[in-house]
Image (cartoon, rainbow, N blue to C red; front, side, top):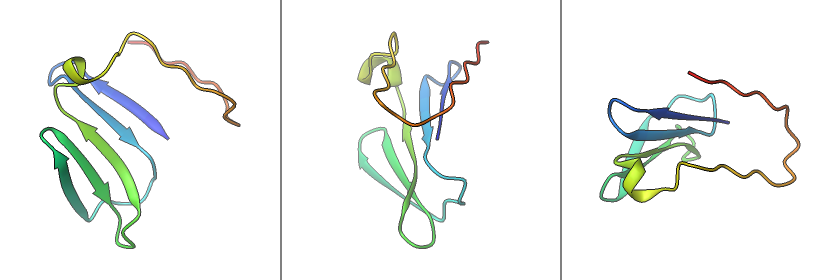
Length: 72
């Protein structure tokens, strides 16, 4: 899973899978869910992210993952 924030467009994309998106549905204004060919969710796109989310903090609890921090 990857979370990318794009400052130039104030959008946040949560990439849940490496599979290709073949369909998308806007579930509410500015929030789009992407699906693969098997109808599995592969990503979530959030426009105007600063007004919809608290981007100051990210808390991950008990996830079995490798920590990798990337800064710009």
